[in-house]
Length: 433
Ligand SMILES: [Zn+2]
Ligand SMILES: [Zn+2]
Image 1 (tube, rainbow, N blue to C red):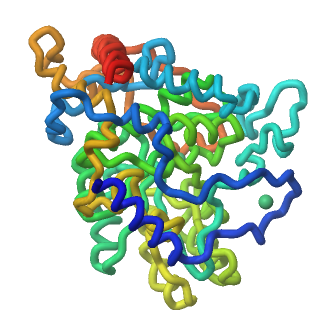
Image 2: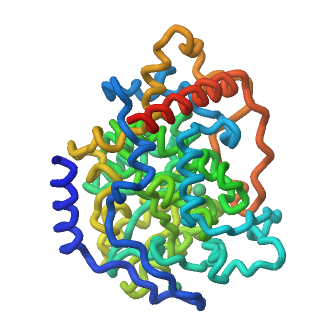
């Protein structure tokens, strides 16, 4: 009943919403596709309902963020596509069988260049429509509504996150954080500084790869673990938005995000290049963007990974309003302003837990059983001490191929075994519920 009420409320809200983003800055030609339904919630038969479903006996007591129980069960490196939770694989296979995932071949990384597709396949053609090549797929978000500075920051959480959150708090503003899953594992306190301040949390993959170079199962792993960790760290909120690292997405990747996890793809229409910039160069870029016409609204790529990127934003912030822009967190500026698939915001008390709860939440209760209790060292701390992994940073490899995947630690292997078992059980729950 509550769910239906929220649907009605959201429909009413959407009819009053700001104008939808448009495409006037398009600098390419492409085939127009049928637009997706303009609803924020997922249809009842969408797999996200079963992937995020309450398990029998689930008291929805999530482990404390930062605790060993919280981080247990997550890979510390790129997820192994052979040990994904079975329910995720089932959902992918069902979407493929239903013809919902276009059969686009994987691209290849070329050092210092954009990924390339085999057999000369045109990245700007309707089959691929690569966001790296600025091909816009209808339903993906590139622009914000007119006059809106739709703010977001990528690659957090990081040690810089609290500074950014504190600054915006002093302005009574928030932003949208496209977070890297492994960085949430490394910086739980900084994660909470953003979430508890009411900032919007979105997905930026588990290990920040070029997504079009990955297999479909690898894509499911990169999105799924990040979805699950955010879900379990926000009182059961299911993320609604994701941004592809390097802006690298295409028809296959965005369809997996949407059809398996209900995620809408968000790119940007201006790039501050702050990750490689100096205070002067970033300032210059931001000043230039603020002088642009108010149509379309701005979505500027910015990062919360270094003092220079955060300080450049703070320095430029007064100019945003002075130039006539309305500053808003991106997630609140687009669509109907609901940040999550099952909740309005990070602070709202409307989370629809009973309907959309990750089946793998049973991990938390399972990890308390004697046979599956992880050792006292969390996956995070064990990998940190052995040096097999480090917080994902993209300050130096924006245009480079990702480094090869380090070998898995014992903790990671143990974790994947636990997750595999959980996946089998959650599939059973899925099949018999
Ligand atoms: Zn277009
Ligand atoms: Zn990034």
